Length: 290
Length: 220
Image (cartoon, rainbow over all chains, first blue to last red):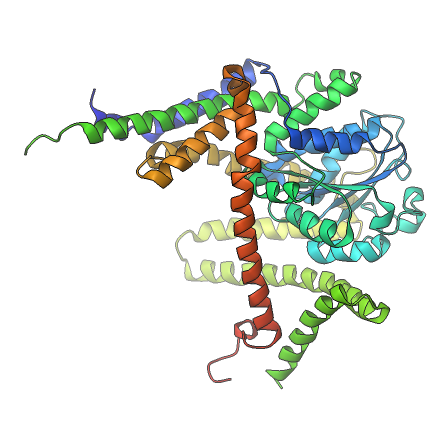
């Protein structure tokens, strides 16, 4: 076989393989098994150890570009908190769609828990610009940073916010993050103010968070879609009632997304190995004299 | 004055939060948190500056008919439409910027759901195709360093999917070890280096050695 031709394969052939690897598992769901890694287990255990009525901040620090990875994390965290009757403060610090993502995911999950009351069990404080400054200021006074909720209701009129003024009144923060905002929660809010932080970053930025996790500056880590699918499994195993929700036809979940990601990973591994085999074979072959 | 006032402002804005971190004194803290409040407002103005810059750049592009100028019209139209509904929504016109209490979309939310979200999703999804093609062509074991990188990448890629565990239960454990030990050590090194660099740059700005942010001409 002509090695040069394999080396110079038309990129559209590679695209075709990736497209098939993406589309086919969506149509024919494989349901690959999900194993749990320690960072996800740590995150789950930390929330599991909270008591009913405890307050958690869920910060939407991502936009639509990374929503397929971050949104299932947000859903799983919200479902976990609401199943345990943990009160949730939703905020958004990411300018490119953080607020809309927060509204979408909160609306979707709240509809699954009809007995929840807005302002009592959860609240959406909306978006605030200047992420780092807002994070620092929230340690002094959350009410000053978010004087109203997303609908314009003054924060003083929201029952669950009456006794929640600073980080000292919050048990944990969960940041679903793309970019650097998740890092600020770990190296600014946790390091300076001591609030336990769990970050759910995209897979591409997950490696840097291991430095914070190993330094105990984070209470857990969900690395990309894999982390999200692990969390989904943990939540469903602990709260079997949620299995019905995750089995809803047409609902996008990380577990379904992992089927696609697994197949595409395999295709990429195959291409990398093939590329190297061809490269080494070509190097060993003696060149013909001109 | 044009030089001294910004330098003094920068000095105080930079030095106060540092002092506040190490001096737990009430008055110092009050000044520092007041600065934080100002920073939130200034960050808002930075967004406005960005908008002005985008408008200037793209109107110039259209006026000069530079390459790709029709896209500048699309960009400005998008900015104007989203900006209008976002701005009006902030004053509760059209039902705000989130969904309405009955669950229906406000114009801003509708535009987000039907234009911004699919466009951003498409842009990000294209990366999978480019990455597959690029890794086939460029990810080669050309030398020792590249071979180590390649082997680590293949172990992690395979270990992050269920097939790794199907081969052996040690595969995900090896992946996790690579991530939490060698990767963590390398990340720490990068972070410490970047941190030291940022600290030294901040010091240069605070004490007035670094002045390029003032935008002054030569000799000023």
